Amino acid sequence: MLIDYSPSNSFVHLLDVRTKSLGFVVLTAVSFLFPAPLINIALIIFLWIVLLSIKMPLERVKKILKPLIPIFIIMLVITGFTYPSSNFHNEQNKKILFSLLSGERFPFTVGGLLYGITLTLRIFVMVLASTIVTFSTPIEDILQLLKKMKMPYQLAFVIATGIRFIPTMQKKSEMIQEAQKARGAEVGAGGIIKSIKSYIPVLIPMIVDSLRMSDNLAVAMLNRGFGAMKTSTNLYEIKMKNRDYLLCVVEVLILLTAVWARSIKIGVL
Image (cartoon, rainbow, N blue to C red; front, side, top):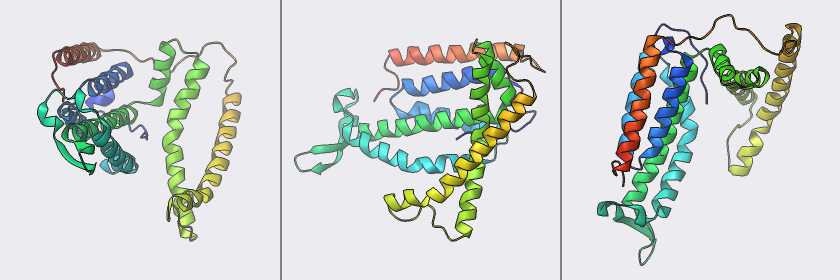
C-alpha cells in the first residue's frame, strides 16, 4: 500500500522526515479520538489538498484504495448492527433505520452507521497520510530516522529495505497478473475458492522472483562490506530547519487541542 518516492521541490518534500513522521502520528491519533465522522472528513480534505500540492498521481492512490472497498462495506454493515446504543449521547443516533428480525431485533442504527463511516474514514486517513510520507521522503531519510531512534542499523536497514521493496513487488505482481491473463488465466475470477486458486500462477513466480531479488541484494551487500563495522555513516545527514521546528510545535498543539476537545465531549455520537 506504499508509493515510491518521487523527487520534487514541493513544501512537503523539503520537510524533515521527523516532521512528516510526527504529522502522520498526530493525524492518526486525531482520527481515532472522535467517534463522529465530521472531524475525519476534515482530515481527509486536508490530506487531499496536500496530495494535490505534491502532485501525486491520483490514479496510484485509487489503486491503493480500490481493494479496500469490500472491507469498508463489511465494516459499515457490521458496525451498523453491532455498535451498542448505550454509547450514543445523541438521541437521534439511537434511531433504528431497519431491523433484520421482527421486534426490532438486530437493529441497524443511525449511530452505528455513522461510527462505521468513521472507521472507514480512519483507514482513509492512515492510507493517505502514509502515502504522502513515502511519496515525499527518500528511503535514506527513513533509514536515518530509524537509526536516530537508537535502532540497530542492521535492523533499520531490513525495515527500510522492506518498505522500499513493497512498491516494487506491487509492480511485479501487476506485471505477472497481466502476463498470466495474456496466457488465458482467469486471475481473481469465480467464487472464493476458485478465486484463491487462480492466484497460484501469480504467487509462485512472485515467490521465485522475491527469492532471486533477496539473493542479489545479499550479494550486493556483501560486496559493499555490509556488517563489517558496528556503525554506519551517511552521505547526507538529515537536519531540522526552522520551519520543521515550527511545524512540530503546531502538530503538538493540534494534538493537545484534539485531546481537550474530546474531553469536553466534542465529536461524540
